[in-house]
Length: 315
Ligand SMILES: NC(=O)c1ccc[n+]([C@@H]2O[C@H](COP(=O)([O-])OP(=O)(O)OC[C@H]3O[C@@H](n4cnc5c(N)ncnc54)[C@H](OP(=O)(O)O)[C@@H]3O)[C@@H](O)[C@H]2O)c1
Image (cartoon, rainbow, N blue to C red; front, side):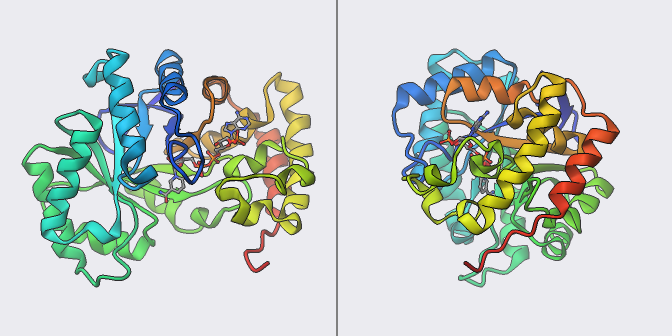
């Protein structure tokens, strides 16, 4: 496994993070023994950076992680656990309550990285009031570092001005070969400010592996029923891109998924893809996406083709 450091800290994180939204109704993986085998494989291949959220499976994901890490005797100091607090839980009372519950589910006494999952859109909680409360939790020792997920850069910038003792160490955003808005502002901003950019849906929820035929996509029975990437108007274009990626993958003796993830890590040294997995085999495969690099020419070949694809969300 290849490692980097979290933001401006000296905390060592694996270059591929394990995404665990899969442990939820949305993705349908609710069997603890499978979840445990996924986590065990992640540790086995050197992944130490685990991404979860308070709302994944309404706490189930955090619960599975806590239980599995205990049963697997994982050393706390070797792990970097990132969890997220949703915009709805950001009143000053709820922040403490939510974090206490998260600590309990994860069976830990501190969280390495706490990200605000999304801004409080519906409750009008002033930015500085919740950012200062989050900073207090860091000062009190229950959280080590803070991050922001799904924040526009302007709001991230103003959230940072509310902090006096700590800074934002990570931004988490959607970023994959065909959903690339992050490259306009988020990536340059993270690069300039020494932040880790955690890329979610790096495999386009599996679409970019090209393993599903158009007919298969009609049978998907999880959250992907409503996922625009799997709509035939978009998915047909994705399958054409996958052909280009597959051809490159053959030359490197890698899989399509590994090249799709490697394209992200080659893009910038601050990018850490959060790859979700449904089986230990997928974790192992995704871990094999790092410790090597695409050549400049192959990176460009994939980049050029991917840029020509226009995904539409109005379907
Ligand atoms: N901050 C946010 O708002 C936010 C939003 C979304 C996700 N996230 C985080 O990012 C993580 C990853 O994003 P994501 O779950 O949306 O999508 P993703 O990582 O792009 O795709 C994950 C899915 O792709 C398939 N897959 C994984 N590895 C594969 C491989 N090697 N070969 C073939 N198929 C493979 C699996 O589904 P099948 O096997 O069923 O096809 C898996 O469930 C989440 O778990 C979560 O931690 C954060």
